Length: 362
Ligand code: ADP
Image (tube, rainbow, N blue to C red; front, side, top):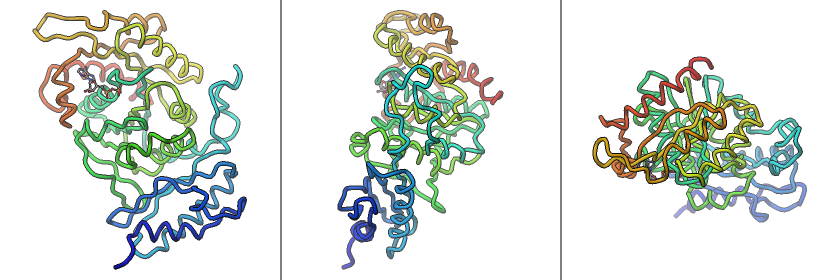
């Protein structure tokens, strides 16, 4: 019996040498996340610390050619992580806090491929578990229902939830070397969770995160869109810096729960985007209250905290989303409530109407 495709691809990659060390790229652990699916589509990331960007690029080309030559391989999609140009940390001095102008990062080049996407909006949160992905998914559906051609990119490397929220199964498929987004609930969607295994992504360091974002931007065939929402990982880290560096963001929407702990993070998020001249489109307060009986509100996490923080920070307040137990159940079942007839649809419709002018203006 023939050897499995993945082993044959691995063997072929083992014949590619890194000129700066003289070792082959498999032996030095330079190939990460190698996948070969049943249709012969191969994906991997090249991660060679200590190698210049130019060298990495040429090794990547050699590696792609070697993989493509293996019998049974239909397409190869691969990225090299940008060790030479990755911003180290947001502590580079006041006038240039993120090293934005030093070297053109490859994520920025990737963003140039989004020529047919009018408006790109980051959905961010100071911390995890505030419902950022749930809000992003329902907001995307609400915008699509208002007639905008809407895409949703789940770049939450450390907890991609779009496959669950939208009920997407299996792995992404490819056509002509591009990853095809999935049309679901009227939205063109793609998730990092459909490209790599979750536990694999968890171990990624900064440059790998940049590579993944780049791939989600440039290797996905987003087509013509009025707006692309990007569900970013919680906090403010490499993913945000990568996106800000694309200079393609029309703005950011911050999601928070009302309590003070979460609000400190909102302030940090707002300040990151402000420092880099990314407009804050507004703040959404999620899990604002629980309403088990109509008209009876229980403020489990305090009342109106995110709205107050928005005013304090002079950022627009886009609206409050109550805590609906059935929203959690529906999300877990892959059936976002908004695609059905539910009171939460009205909440997201109002928020979408406040975001619409930013899209029309872009
Ligand atoms: P994050 O992206 O911020 O980590 P998620 O969107 O994954 O958060 O939400 C965390 C959990 O909270 C999920 O189980 C989700 O279904 C639930 N959830 C989010 N928003 C609401 C809401 N308004 N009402 C009820 N459950 C919610």
